[in-house]
Image 1 (cartoon, one colour):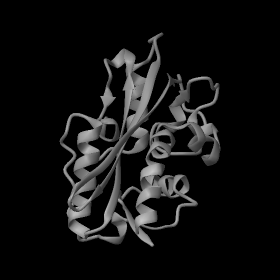
Image 2 (image 1 turned 90 degrees about the vertical axis):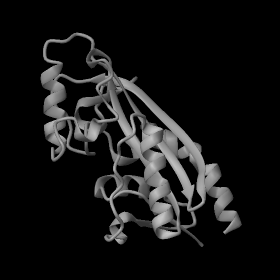
Image 3 (image 1 turned 180 degrees about the vertical axis):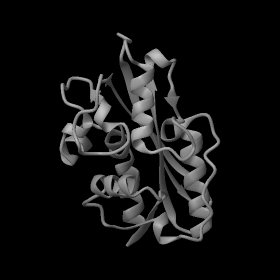
Image 4 (image 1 turned 180 degrees about the horizontal axis):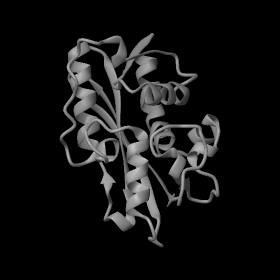
Length: 198
C-alpha cells in the first residue's frame, strides 16, 4: 500500500485533506508523525513555489511520496493581498481570528468585496516533482463573521453562487466546492496511478 505523507503540521488542514482523500487505498501520515523534520521556510512568492518546496523537502527528508499544498486568499480591493501571505497576514505568530479581523478592518466601508481562494497542490517523490494542480474558488468577503465550521478565513468568505460562508457549510458541502477540493480532484488520477504501481 502506498504511504503518502501530507506535508503539513496544521491539524485543521490535515483533517480536511484526510476527508478529501477518503476512499483512496493509501496509508496517510503527516508531518506531525515526523516531529524532528525541519520546517520548510515558505519564502516563495507564488503558491506553486511554496507547495513544491514543501513537497520536495518533506519527500527527501522522509523518503516518502509527499503531497503538499499552499493556499492564498486574493482580495481585489486589497490589490491581491493577503495572497500567498494569507496564513501570516496579521503577523508571524497571528491567529486565524487576527487574520480575519485585519481583512475586515481593511475592507471597512469598501463596496468591492470580490476575492478568490487559490490552492496549489504538489505531489513529489524524493527524486522530484510528479504533478502540480491548482484549484480556484471565486467569491466575496462578508462584512462580518458568519458560521462556526471550518478554519482560517472560512467565516468571512462566501463562495460564488452561495449566500452562505464556508463556515456555514458542512465539511462535506465545503469540500464539494472548495478551492482545495477542486485542486485535489485534479490530482486524484495521478494518485490512482501511483497506487496501482505501488
